[in-house]
Amino acid sequence: MNGSRIDEVRKRMLHLRIDALIVSSISNIRYLTSFSGSHALCIITSRSLFFLTDPRYGNHSSREVRGFKRIVSGGSLIDAARNKGVFTKCKRVGFEAGHSTYATYRSLKRALPAARFVATDNLIEDITVAKSPLELRQIRRAVSISDEVFTMLLGIIKPGVRECDVAAEISYQHRRLGADADAFEPIVASGVRGALPHARATTRKVKSGEMVTLDFGCRVNGFHSDMTRTVAVGKVTRKARQVYAAVLEAQQRAVTAARTEMRVSDLDKIARDCIKAHGYGRYFIHSLGHGLGINLHEKPRISKMSDERLRADSVVTIEPGVYIDGFGGVRIEDDLLLTRHGSEVLTRSPKELMIL
Ligand code: ZN
Ligand code: ZN
Image (cartoon, rainbow, N blue to C red; front, side, top):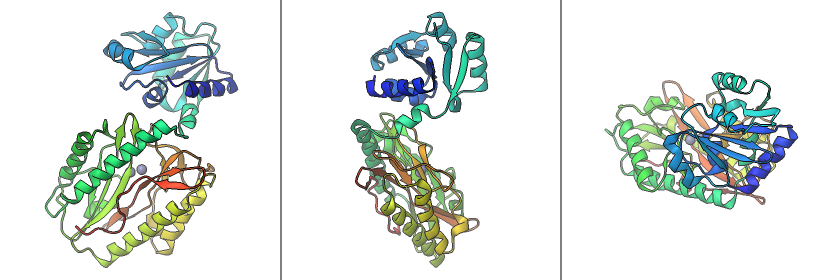
């Protein structure tokens, strides 16, 4: 258990006048309890902390979860909590609106007919934004594993290799180098498929003269890395080099400009204006980046629509891209740590166009 995180949660509960908070997001549960399994609930009241899971994780959770009263039940975890008196005297019960299904909400209402339910939004996600030194160590480790995997990929990407072979190599090397798992299914997009920002790796073979976009990351003790590089296989067209130069310049400008307290919309604008000036503005179809930590995508979303500001001790991705249907695409993504005095690029892999 991390006492200061719990104190912070309770402070926010007080503010919302909530007597009990039901945490159902598995990564938020991991953040609060260190539980690494896949099924649990966590209930925080002003006086007590409860952790509930099913019998598969009985033993498992007894090793990982400290400072919480553990309840192991084969049936509905909400019913088990109610039967154990977890909600006694709780009038206003908070739940995580973004992580609860309508079915969960209905069963909550059935189990606690007298309670008033309060939908909370990003209550724990807000707390996860600023990283502790221990959390940063996990992120640094995850980033350096992905950097090492990228170096290995340079040796296997060549004409004839299939996208799915490259994706399999990414997953295998992540695990071999000590990650818990991939952060997400690796993206390997060659040639025209590079125009799909989230292309799944297929059996398509990489050809000479094509660009290949690789977007991948891993997880270390629950914390994520996320990086993208686009490489050239053999000699690519002038247009491909021009698109690459535009994305690289936008990415570097944004990395250099990023500062704690800066508006994320201003940062997004720096990259967007640069790509626009190169003539590819309408092909940059997503936001510039996102927060990274116990969740792969967390606050802030670095978007022109957001009024958030960058916060000290947070980690964000900077990932502009250009996607042209029938041609292909380029994306470059680094993980950036914001400090009180500036920033540090955690991703170390080179960014100048590599020709394999
Ligand atoms: Zn990514
Ligand atoms: Zn990303």
